[in-house]
Image (cartoon, rainbow, N blue to C red):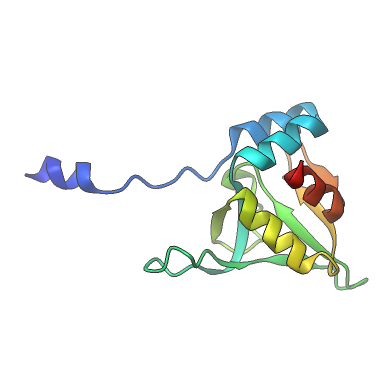
Amino acid sequence: MAGKKRDAKKALPEFRNPQLADALQTQDMAALAFALRHGPTVVPLMRPGDRDDLRDVGEIWTYRDPGTGEVALLLFSDAAHKPEALPAHVALQSPAGLRAFLSAHESAITTVFFDIAGPHPMQAAPTDVIAALDA
């Protein structure tokens, strides 16, 4: 019976997008756009989602530069690339969810960083990320 309980237990999601990691490694914008459209993106969370409500993914964390007030969205190809200084929780954001978040906050977000701490960081304007998601 113990084996049945393990089999019935839902596997935890893998907090990574290999296609996004490959696109960042090659610095290929077309591959980055494809990876964003076809896979989840790891986002840091201020507040984790409610486990009993699948619609609640939590509150996405953004960075506000204390000197300039500019806001950056940090996205990751793998939760392992998230710096320890960021909030501990992460979520997998779907392409549609990422598009909705960027649309809602496009006027506030000045830049989007991918894997900011490496190994292959990239930066894009929010409008470029939205265009990539819409392509």
